[in-house]
Length: 313
Ligand SMILES: [Zn+2]
Image 1 (cartoon, rainbow, N blue to C red):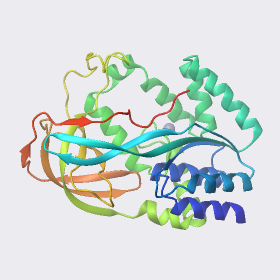
Image 2 (image 1 turned 30 degrees about the vertical axis):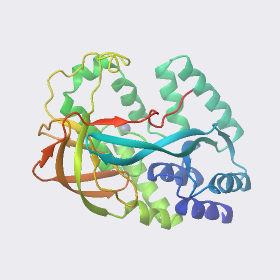
Image 3 (image 1 turned 120 degrees about the horizontal axis):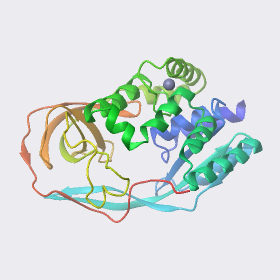
């Protein structure tokens, strides 16, 4: 237990883990999950954290696979109609396993993902990552475009995602609904476990951080009729939108970073609209109160070289 405490202490103060990764890591270290995947970002400010993290893993006898380093970018400035991105450092993906048996099961899961056996992959993944079975079933259903189109309007779908995230902030999966009993009990269990055993992380994760900044309305979330057609200008499965989930960029830095948020609203904004906002960050999301639009930056665009963080199998 002493080694777990020391690993949790390192994790809480590590710069290279974001809040969602810290949550997953803490729950794994406290044995609430058999398996997890976390991303560690390395910049010139935290060069020692990779070796330090692996030292803790070895001390605990945790089996892990680490990916090769890949570069990542962050917004470095916003000037005129261009959002500039700069390479900030590299990231590694870690698969962590609580036992050799779990590692074997993980191999089966990766096989199923590669073979695109989606139902099997979701079930195996759900077990390994400790998700509730009802939520895994719903997740599999919601992966089907036909099911989505038939059962949700745009607004119903994105409202559900926002609702379950706010209702169950300690979960690392998407709950099947905001009234899911299994999710409610897991959320409570995790909250208590973390409060007791990882108090520094718990305090940081639950704290409300507020700041005011103009936000720039950027892209809008959507789902296309096949997974590649969005890139090729395919058709949305919701041609009529009863609300909007926008990606917005805070134009003012907060703690030395430009943040990107998602904002769900009935109101429609033109791409590039600048709106003053009061932003409250808590857990792994942000709530926003928007004022009246100030102006529109026509044709705002991003100048970057890499896709966002993601994993390959
Ligand atoms: Zn559920």
